[in-house]
Length: 437
Image (cartoon, rainbow, N blue to C red; front, side, top):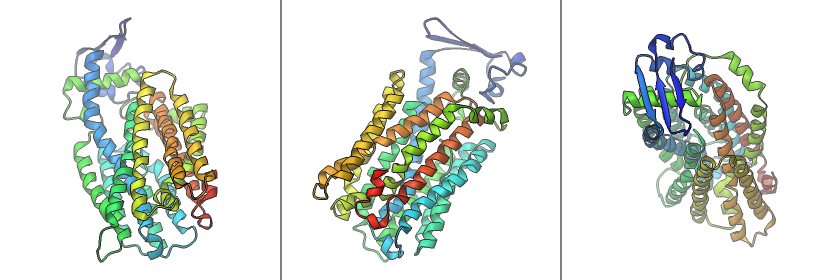
């Protein structure tokens, strides 16, 4: 069986793989799943130190993080482009009345919630990279279909299917923060594209262009993702056999696992009796209620401060930049300073509370102060992202992690489902109930 030992100084890691015993003593590696199978026959003896291990991790990050980051940015653009469409006339042309726009956002998360468990099971049963690539391509197809919708029913149906297809899975604090900071990059890119759309003179209405542009981009990226992304380290063509073995052994040492097609019911029970499971879902629910409304109404909120449509698209960009910066800094601090993660999460909530208070309390005449409050609202993203990294860092076993991720994102969906419903059309443009939440 593979044995991993560290020196007292913690600098050297040695591993010896005994193919004759690997199949019989799997207890130590039960949460690394196919790691044992992969290592069996790959190497007979492997010695490496922390310096070489870091090089392997860096090589993996250098290849995978850009792919995952761009994917998440595109996902955020896809689900938020409806807000740019609303700014450029969708509500009028599609004859949306009352709170129907809020329902367009809510139904997305209904689909997201309904599709979460089936999608995670598909990811566990089939090649995760290929499955993700197919789903990404289908996101783009649904967005293009939204250009054919000219009423509430058509838009609602398309948003529901987009939510189902975007349901799925989400490593450690810094990587998670870099990944989710792409929401901020999406705000920057979306603001630029939203601004440019206002100058397009074409036969089709301006509000349909976000769906055309983002849908086409998503389809192209789905193909690229499918061709380039490996399902696990052992299938990475850009890693040597030695590097693959080191990557698998590091996962074994961390007890986080890499792959399995077996559903383990004992891990399901472990998840539901774990108090952390319920506390983290409660935190997620409370954190995402305000997120749901703010994300859906972002350019409309800025527009309500008294800025023009063109100004509103551009003024949303600093919010994206602040999100990128705050997530990178918090992720780095969480990685370097032990025990600081929870304090960063609390700090993010306090910053968001201050921002909501400024928007709620300041008069309409103080549009700069209210805009500053809008920028501070992004603090809740720090709390949300760091809570995700807690799951990735502290939960072992593929099935258990699947249950955690599924429940986590169900809570995320419920919060985002509730949030838009608190932005009542009758309270526009101040949306007091939304900011009270």
